[in-house]
Image: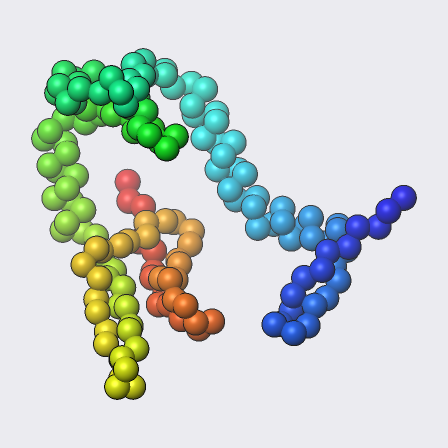
Length: 159
């Protein structure tokens, strides 16, 4: 029988060996939440009626399809699909949702730093706001250095 060992980097210059059972335990600990969520999603999907989607290839796309009130799966080039559900919520519900998000969600605008030839740095705040909505995890905005990025606190889901 073989003994499987994983080589894991501790630092940029030092590796350590971890036996397979320990790695498996770490993996299951870290992915257990997502596996549970996936099982709950599968159970929920099994009881929910499936919408009837008409598949429309890109070569057959007509803009009028967007206004006829039917659900579609538009197949775009590069193996991309867009699911179109125009009656998912009423126009009034959509406006109410937009107003709720705008009034109750504080968006995070990342600051991008660009080094200048003069030795200084130019900081630009992005226009696209981001927000992480989760009951479980905060996350960092992307940074290129080891300590880069800014912690973006999650906003909890509300009923």
